[in-house]
Image (cartoon, rainbow, N blue to C red):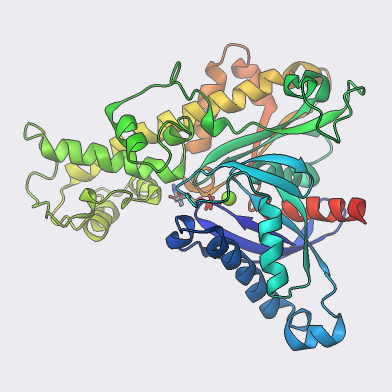
Amino acid sequence: MAVDLGGTNIRVCSVILHGDGSHAIIQTKEAIPTHFMMSHSSKGLFNFVARTVEAFLKKNYPGSVGIEAKILVGYARKFNLGFTFSHAVRQLDINRGTLIRWSKGFDIPGVVGHDVCALLQIELDELRLPVRVTALVNDTVGTLMARAYASPSSAHTIMGAVFGTGSNGAYVEKISRISKLSNSTEKGTKRTESDALMIVNTEWGNFDQKLEFLPNTSYDIAIDSGSVNPGFEMFEKRISGMYLGEILRLVIVDLVNDLQIPLFSISNVPKTSKIYTQWAIDSDFMSILESDTSAQRVESRLEIEQRMGIFNATYEDAQALKIIAHAICRRSARLSAVALGAVVLQTESLESWKQVKGSKVDIGVDGSLIEMYPGFVGEIRGALREIREIGTEGEKQIDITITKDGSGVGAALTASVAAAALG
Ligand code: ADP
Ligand code: MG
């Protein structure tokens, strides 16, 4: 089993791996109520996760919970669960890790420094569910695992990356190249085997915290100062689904306030319009704007009405928003390509596999932004071609494959492997 606590959604799934790259999955998905993301204690959130697991079991494995299970299995922990937890943790063991910091709008005191698997296990046990948390998996690691499992043998899966609420990537690295380990006494690191591999969760969402390289507009500054974690996740704040719609909103407000600019000039922007509410414009609105090619931009204008309460928007208004949305998305995709390209170069995968005919450098990606935003992968590819060390030839060798709900499947896969090891 896996439970994937994302930035927006929680997914619970049970997976049967057929062993040939295919799998069967039963899953449920629901939005995480926002009050659990910012509650006063950790109990609320982890209890909610456990209850979501309970509801899943009741629906799909009715014999495993409640009175029946008590008689049948005496609460023996029957399901091995991979816990996909996508905030920075210090992973101490396969099923143990302490939270370093929250991201993606989560802000619950009393969890930093605590083992998130133990917090979940306590709640699962309290509900007497037949579930044992056997693996703690970052969503990017899950995506990497799921893609590696499903990819053809000619593909070398080097990375799993997520572009959803947040953005992050994990890749396969030689242990000898992990400088952090040389100072560490953490168990489980076999430093003597120089060619041994380890999956590294980069947490690239937090890269360039000091803004030495990243562009910084007035909108980026406003996003950061209005967030629950100012000064952190600066890369993510320019890339991921949680922030793109908000960047668009800030630009719209700026333009509406500028009397020189005729945006929504014949409509009356009501004071109650959602353009004045922080976080009220979701990134999926931008996908709609971008995919609307109708002559009159009918759909876009309808969405402007419904989402922002602005009536009588013109074709030009809709077209202006589309152009702005495209610029925001393009910047996001090109910055995403920087992260993907950097990992391709770091792993020297293009060189290693150039000789093998038909071999591909394989990247699994997951997240609603990359999955649904029209043209997002195309913009990434365009930017990869512009990276000198990759170029047109290198870019052709790179496969970027949507690994839908990979974080769930990969976590279940990891849970199953880990369970065998834990005994
Ligand atoms: P999670 O991050 O919880 O795993 P998802 O991968 O579904 O969840 O990502 C959710 C994020 O994707 C939200 O920030 C949402 O704004 C964004 N999103 C959802 N649909 C679209 C879309 N069609 N186009 C662009 N962004 C989208
Ligand atoms: Mg996700």
